[in-house]
Image (cartoon, rainbow, N blue to C red; front, side, top):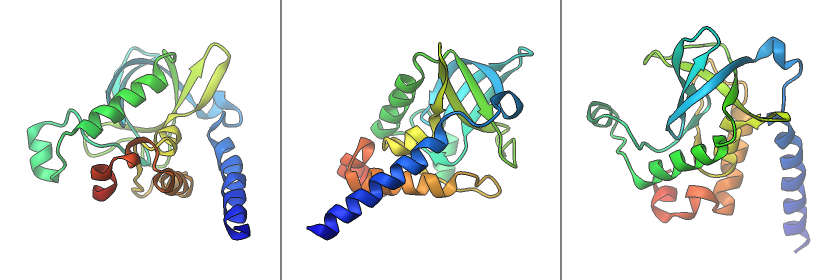
Length: 183
């Protein structure tokens, strides 16, 4: 029993330590790009408008949500099928961003992927300012898995920790046997 309490206490301390790293980064005006949210494409992809009016598709770095709107050619190539879990992940992302018309993007080392999507850590905001990193929330709340692709690895350890915690607790999509079995 004492061992279990010690483990829970240590996990709580780690959550407090890592939880804060998804709040507002230091000097946000120097590291973040302000954009307008146009719409959510799926659980790990959004479409935004930059200040110059350019519309871009943004892939959230470090996470992977189940597919919900993938074209047939993509699903044939990857073997990843559109699923109800993908729809749930998309709805969860919509819920997270429902009050955030303005978002902020932070880049890692590589800014564009092979599909010409912008790669970014996405920060939500409200009337009081930046509220936190959406990529981290999706994994922490169990609606996406951690996906590390070099060279964009700045938060890989935190995302892996969030995934393990969500999986162990059976929250979000992890509560569904079919999702847990496939991941």
